[in-house]
Image (cartoon, rainbow, N blue to C red):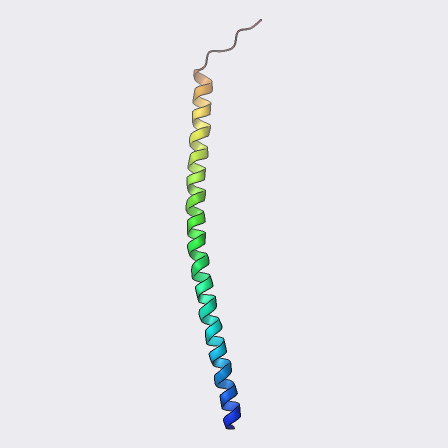
Length: 68
């Protein structure tokens, strides 16, 4: 192999390593964002359940409307 060929291969490897590091950072950032979104979804589901159960229980505690 010639010196130029080796230099080209080293350049390609350096380029690929840089891209791998960039992609690893993107994946790590997306994992954190996904965890945050899952937590937000869980809280939203809990709030919806609480609101639905409070609406249901308050509707049952109201007296029936008068009939005309």
